[in-house]
Image 1 (cartoon, one colour):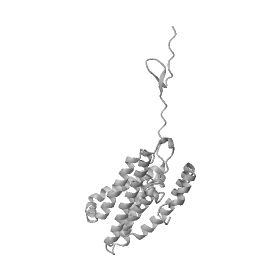
Image 2 (cartoon, rainbow, N blue to C red; image 1 turned 90 degrees about the vertical axis):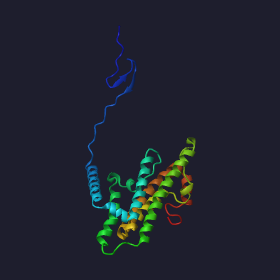
Image 3 (tube, rainbow, N blue to C red; image 1 turned 60 degrees about the horizontal axis):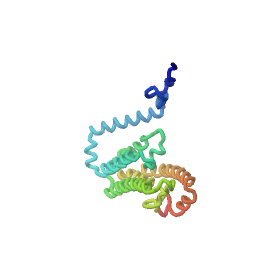
Image 4 (cartoon, rainbow, N blue to C red; image 1 turned 135 degrees about the vertical axis):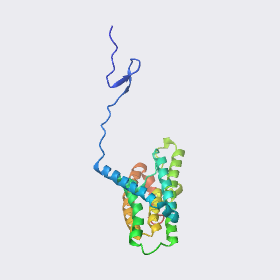
Length: 249
């Protein structure tokens, strides 16, 4: 009596019958690149410095500068919302991280460090900045992060209400009635608020120039993709709206 054929060694059979699954050979684990290791080390070093600063009275500093604490809380909420939405196809995009590549969060850490550094080492004898300037910076941060999150919510709601048979959906309601990239507009506004809180003009100018370059490239790439997907519909939309600032650009 012939024996039943045996499955190949890399397959699993149930009750001796036809194999029902294939075990793929695991890919070798690649060692992290030098750049990734350098970024990880730099991030860890900054985290250590932050931990040390907790023991040197940073809690007292935040208590005396509630505008800084409020901004950081708003940013933390923004990042938590990003984590919650990462599983969705239309997940909110972090403008700084999307253009930083392997650097990851390092540019964000540098942005947060630049403004207090400038205030401490360039204007140490000039006293505190006017309260109204810090208040404007905080307001820009709160409105900016709120705008970015609302834009994401409007995209998600439009996707839920649309029928899959209709194909890709172009959102033109809510904030998208006024600008084509409200999420980027909100994030740009929020980032510009940070140097205002500290009264750091050089950091503000550097952020403005670098942000303009990043935005220009990112928006150009995305709009070319949207034109390919929606064609004349998106071309008409570009003639009816501005990119980031209504009536200006």
